[in-house]
Length: 182
Image (cartoon, rainbow, N blue to C red; front, side, top):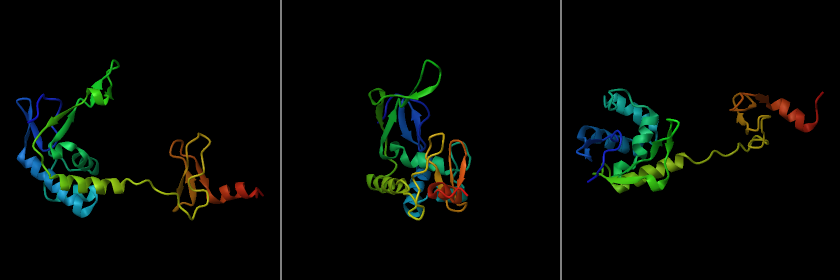
C-alpha cells in the first residue's frame, strides 16, 4: 500500500519498510474515537471517554480535545495519508508547502467512508461562524483603536479587544453614540 517514509506515522499506523501498516491497538482506539464523536459530538467528551477507558496516546499520556481533532481530521483514517505538507525553510523554520510538492500515500483504512463523512459533517457544523448578538445593537460593528473588531461579553456588559485587551463598557459606548457625555 503506501510508500516512502515521511515523518512520524499517523496515529493508528506504523512505518514498516517504507509503507504505512496498521498498528491494530492504536487503530482500535482511533475507531472508538470516531464512534464516540458521532455519538457525543464533542472532541472534549471523546478525550474524557478515552482517558476513562485507559486508552492513551502513543506516548502514554491523556488525550486532549486538540489531539482528538487531529485524529478525526487526518485523512489516513480513510486510507489516504498526505505527505510533504511542510518543509524546512532557509531560516530553519517549518512552513507549509504548496499542493504541487505534496503526495498521497495509500494505506489501509481505519474507518468507512460513511463514518468519515458523518464525522466531517459534524465537525463542519460545529465550525459555523458565530453570528452577532441581535440583542446588542453594535455587536459586530465596534472596532478598537488598534483596528481589531471588538467582541461583546454578555456577562460583563462590555466590548473587548482580543489584541490589546482594551475594554469598553456598554454604558460608555451608548453614551458616545447618543451624544450624552455628561
